[in-house]
Length: 579
Image 1 (cartoon, rainbow, N blue to C red):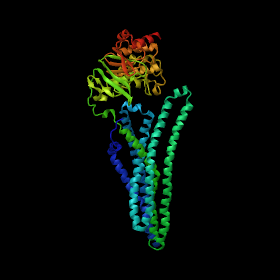
Image 2: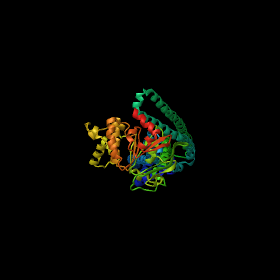
Image 3: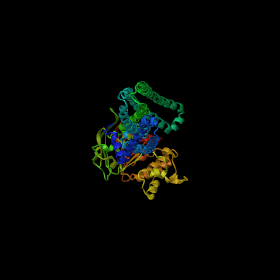
Image 4: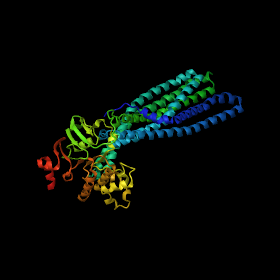
């Protein structure tokens, strides 16, 4: 799969920049909050060295008021900060999810053939969650911790340069250990995201195929598959917990050494020698605690930030995939088409060196019905997929109205395309919504005309809610024939110039099929139609029948011409007629 080099930061820029004023307000709140946090420790020196020895009550009142106000400022700033940055983080998550989902929908069909839908859901919904930690907690810790550390160091050096350097050594050692730990943890989190996506993907498949699972009594088998997946997830978590434990234990010892051992040992020596006052000693202690606190917090949220970055790495991989619209050679925009389609020596392979189509050549004039017949796996659906532009040929070319499809903008082409696929996919919701899917703003007259053409009203009239009947996920509450008629009505409403019918009548009973054949006869008039059919009786009036065998056109002609040849088509037709 081709890739483009686009940083996720570009996506952030489009999200953050329009709301930069609120982000700057958040940064200002951080500065004010951290400035207020220094009032209490600095006031200790004046309290112990000046106010208490001199019994200065007036100064005491002022100091108490200033300290109380500083805590009030911190509380207010904390509330506002949480509200502002949390809102921005949630906004970024929603916007980034929308961008990633838009990117995914624009990727070629081949990408989806090789990627589980459940895994994509995980990447869209879960991987971007890290933005909350980066913009919320991460921004506060980075900016606030930096301000606190710089100001604290300046004030600490002012009290005692030697003691500051001694206490700083364990902190530097801890920072070194933390960086090493994060370097180990990050790839572990990247792997966790992949495992998590795979497990969720399998779970999605399991729930979607619950009838098959129960039908084959395979609940235990599926449970074991899922257990293996969650065990892989557990083993991954165990690795990250080990690295986190090393970091946490190191912080406990080294920060304890800095704040207690050095402070009590060397600080006590300076105090007893009279090199610092009691007020300076306690001021130093509180300032050191103030500097160490964000470091401890950073170590605690470090794994979260690392996981966030790993998730965004995976998101960036997805955003770097080359979309259909970014293929530079697709410069021709179609405003209208007649529907002439021509295959010229087209070959195609899903996997390298494993061709499924070999030098396919044929021509469909505007309004022709092209029937594709042959055994399963012969390449019929692949030809239809190429005609629908879902796939691109590996060699040869496909022409649409004498324009090379490889140079045609796909969005402009697909506005003239309609499909009725073999799996008759329906969305959860009502019958009305599913028929209106290609044209949500269609009039009631157009809607009912499509419903009547596909004989959907034949069964909706029996439902209490009619067209507003809820059909369940993938139309599970309907029969196969009912689902297929809705899919055909959807294609009728789309009013396409090129129509793909992939086993469009495969799930219909004999009576329904007879009705649908009448509607399809009307639907295909004036439209270039590709019909994949196993029931050969349904394609007798096709302008051209292609018999596909092993990825090649074995026979080509009308029904009467092929019957006269008494070849492969003749054998298939006469065999079905005897059944």
